[in-house]
Image (tube, rainbow, N blue to C red):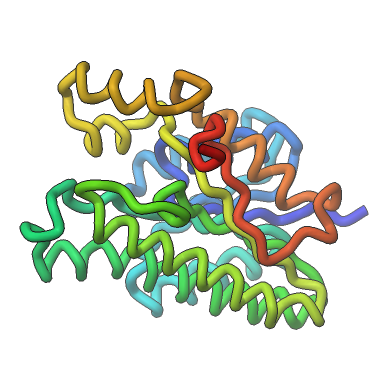
Length: 249
């Protein structure tokens, strides 16, 4: 049986890192990507220690030439691409819509939307030629509801959900599945930056989650691994909310 090859962007911290470790424990071939070579090489070594064949390739997902080189590099190293997890993303500035700036829009959309589009574009080309593959995009509950102070981030994640559905329609006839995972609050540095250091604000937000807590990165990673697996082989074009019942309210 051919060993699967998995590619993860934004793999160096948070959900991306947890996902890399979850796949690494399965002994797959894995390419991790990000913009910090030292951290990337350390993660690749950690994955190899788990039994995976692992490589780090530096890439900025807002630059198409780098995205193309990343995916071509993964295929050159391992011969194919079975799973792609498009995790690279930023939270942008948490401010009222009346205070949002053109620069914040550009910065947020270039990473969250353009980065996802370019990644899907080149991953899909490889997977269509293979006749099989699974792409998992990282969305958010912000891709399904509105959020005060986060208009630009919310808009970017709604766009990711639209990209996911449209790409799924194109991929389904040739055996390529495209889905999204939409986490609620997760115990990461991004959540700390987004909510700020005010414990009252953080506790108030977590109290609005029926589960009364944030998820761990590992809980999101487990969902991603399942969604990319053959156990979900008829599931495509969907966004799976992993949010402690927040969007069920």
